Length: 313
Ligand code: CP
Image (cartoon, rainbow, N blue to C red; front, side):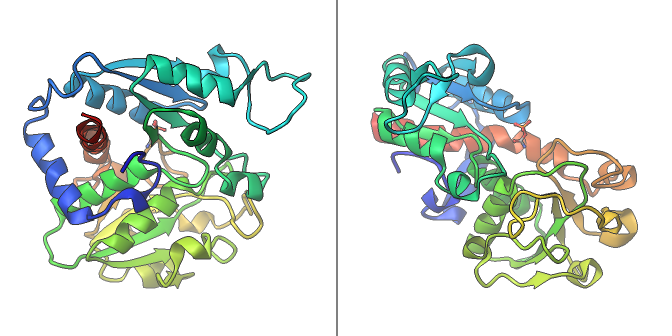
C-alpha cells in the first residue's frame, strides 16, 4: 500500500481493526517511527475531526505535521492539462505536488466534490493529480467519492461495540437542508461489505447510492422495515446520485428518533445538525457512539500512517 485513498486499499479489515485496537491501547509505542519526518495536511475544505485527529495521529508517531488551508491561503491551483492559465489559477498541480513532496514525507489531502459535475467528481481530479504528480505517499482525508479514514474508524467502532458475532448494521439516509456528498456513505458501505455483518441500506426513492458501490447490498425504501432488529444505525445525509448532487426536498419524516432506533447503537461521522438529521434524545442517549467514533479517528489515521511509514522505512 503506497497510498491510502480508498477502503479498497485495506487488504484484511479484521487484521487492521485488531492492529488499530492495539494502537489505541498504547498510542505512543511507535513514537520513534516518524522521527525527523514530516506530514503535510492540505485542506481544500473545512474540517474539525479530520484535521485534529490526523495531526494527533502524526504526533503520536513522532511525525511533524504541517497544515495548510489550501483554498484560502495558497495560490489558486490549476488541475487541467494544457490549460491556458489566464484565469484565477496561478499555479499548476504539476509543480505544486512536486514542491510539497520536497517538504513532506507523506501528503494528506481533503478535497470535496463539486456535486454539479458527476464525471469530474468520479474522476477524483484532485486526489488523482496528487497521486500522479507527488513523489511521496498520498492519504485521502476525504475526497469527492470516499472518506476512507472515516470508513476505517467506523469499522473499528462497530467491532468494539458489537455484542454479536454477526450484528445487523443499517446505513440510513436522513434529511438535511443542504445537498451533501456521497463520500462517507460510500466508504461506510465499502467497509461494511468487507466485514462479517448483516448490512442493509435505507434511503428514500431517488437517493440510491452509486450501484457500483452498493453492489448487492439490500436497499430498503421503508426505514421502519430496514431498522427491524438493527444493532447499529449509521446515519448520514447524501444528495441524490441519480439526479446528481441535488437535494430533492421532503422526506423530513426520515429524521432519526429514539422510537425508531429502539435499542440500536446510533452512529454518525459528525458534524450533525441536531433535530434536522437526528433528534436530541438519540444524540444525548447512552446508545450514541458519535463521540467514541470521533475518538477512533485518531487511531484509524495512526494505523494508516504507521503502515505507510513502515513500508517507507
Ligand atoms: N467526520 C469528519 O470528517 O469530520 P470533519 O469534517 O470535521 O473533519
